[in-house]
Each structure stands twice: as structure tokens, then as C-alpha cells.
Length: 326
Image (cartoon, rainbow, N blue to C red; front, side):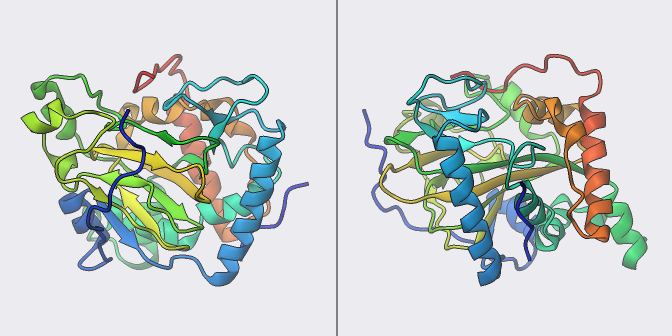
């Protein structure tokens, strides 16, 4: 039964200086400048407690072999095996909104949380696009552009593990001209990590989402240190929003508890440019059966619209391939 909703190189970096941003002057301005922005204390203590409990049950369910949608070691990127051998370690749990996920109601409440959606609308700049539309009508039009995408849980791995330096949807091997062209495309998404425990796993190169890599960055060890890298330090309840084409990596320690909700929401303007990034994870296989019935009426209407726009995104796409190679 689903639960009720809310109310070589060492994997460890030395301590480069922390980098954090505030929500002023605006989330959109901060992400355009730095590639990421931290919103502190998004969750209330009660919401944090509820989500920790749901994630603990979900993790126990997964580690006991009762959930097939996993990020398995040592693979960094999709596709991950649907039937991994017994004893395979994991570092993440996929598809938190899947109709078969026992805790889907709690996760739906957090994914469609008004503070998350408010931040997403600001990041996507829909208020700037529709300045003439104010008040409830303008907000309604903004919400009609949002697309449900991905929601996963990143957890403490069973062994030391790290992701290489990468951009999510621009291959590391591409030449400078292709990289420049891809980075000039608008970022029709908002991606976030919402930490339930202290989290220092995400490492970024601030500002790199807006430029091609330097010679030094291209020649750097993809599993080592990068010039200008910064550790993103989150406290429980903090969320970091980031452009997924910022140069970044993840470093995950086996002995540090981690439960971080990893989500994304898109914009209909992204169209096919978002299709591979989202559909490569297999969300199209179950989204039509997604159950949002326990959300309150207003939130449910908003969420159903976002779900339907994801269905439309996947319609007729076929095999979209994968953004990265393992």
C-alpha cells in the first residue's frame, strides 16, 4: 500500500572551498551566471522527517531485491540492468513516481511541492516570457508549460564510487565547435538535488555551462581534479538547482549516509531537445499509469497536466539512444 503524502585517484577530494549561492537577486540570474544555485531549508522539519522515513523504507525494499529500477555499481550512466545479479551494489533508486512504487504518494507530494514548482517557474523564466500576464492567469499559463520528467533517489553506495567529469547531454568527446553550438541552446529544464542528510557529493565548475571547455579542462583526468572545481555543500532540507550541462561529477563515499532526491522538470519549449535526456531512463514505459490521485485537487490538476505533457513528449519517439557511454 502506498504511504500518505507530505505535509586510481582517490574518490575523496581534499577540501576545496565551498561554493553556495542565495536566491537573491533571482534563481534564474544565479543559474545563468554560476550554473547552479542553492535554496536553503526548502523543507520543514516535519516534511524532512516524513521523507527520510519513506526513503529508508524504499532503500530497504531495493536492497532486499524487491525493486528492479536501480542505479547499479559500477555503471555510471544508463542503461542499468533490469535484472542485476544478486548482491550487485547500488548507488541510486529510479522511478520514484512509478505506479508500483510503494512510497509513490510521499514522493509525488515532494516532487510537486509548491516550493519546488515555484523555483522551477522562476528558473525557466516564464514570468519574463509572459510579462503582460500577471496574477493567477499568468501563473496558470506558466504551469501549462511544465513537463513532468525524472525523480530518483541517490543513496550511499555499497563501495567507494565516483562519476567522471561530464555534461549530462553533451558528450565529453565532442569538438569545440559542436560543444559551443550545443551550449548555446536554451536550457529548457530545471534539475535539482534535494538533500535529506548532509551532502557534499556534487562537484561543479561554476560558470562552465555557458562556455566551451578550456585546454586545461579538456586535458584533465576525468576521474581527477579539475581547475576551478567547487564542492556543493548541502544541509538537510537544502536543495541545489543546476543546469545539467555544467561541468560536474559526483563523488560518493560508502561510509557516509546519503539520501538525496534527484529530480528534473522540463518545459514544452524544449520538445525533442529534452526527449533523449528524459526518455533514456525508461520513464515512458510507465508514465501513462502514474497514479496521482492522493494529491489535493489543485495540485493533482497541475500534476496531471505535467504528466500528460510527458506522455506527449514520448509519443512516436522510438529509440532515443543514450547521452553518455559507460
